[in-house]
Length: 328
View 1 (cartoon, rainbow, N blue to C red):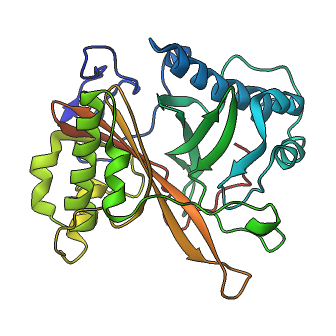
View 2 (cartoon, rainbow, N blue to C red):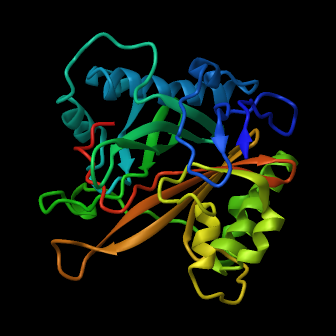
């Protein structure tokens, strides 16, 4: 079935924060698209949310893309908390790392291309279209690079992203200013992450939370009809031309009793318009320190349409992918 190009809308009738869908074939992996009007994503009827989005956007284009590290003094807190497994914490360390970026005029837009920006409370999610080399043979494929920021006052105070590379042996430990552990809620405490002053956003979060518990955790593949739209659009590059990745994962595991909480540590659920981003934390053995561990953050974003999950993006890569050095 071929889906015509379209622009979705959020539950309140406003345009979706997601890019329009173009020529997507049902059951196939659909390439990640950049938003056709990225600057429109900075607009918000809530002035504070608009300011928070602009803060993350300006930091990225001026420092990460253009090497103007002096701007970090105005855009980041001094004790900037870093949860990336490959980067140290603190504003001074941030400036030192990105001083390697060739200095140039600050561009009007960020790169890689912006997929969307979502803000709720003091949190901002910036999603970027990422191109990666195919693990075998020529060609490239797309995934989504996610960044989550917490804003404190008028500065960025904390950062998580979807890079899951292990830390190198020379990276400082958390006690010495290295990346800080990814923490979040487990068990009944996860319910607080589903709250919102907007009943529609709270309902969207609950929908994603329940779908995750049934499909991802309990392996109830039959529940897909209840939670997923008939023309569900999949951007997970690990999916095949068969079922979407979320269904394939459910079918590939032994069903277990349904739990009241997600199995993964829930760092945050950020919702705006018709989008919900699920942010989870994961622990791994440290590759070069016996008995130690490190943590990573995984992101999954869903677009809601008519009470069901209609579209999915993730920061995952195909197995065997060897990405280049982190510069985004």
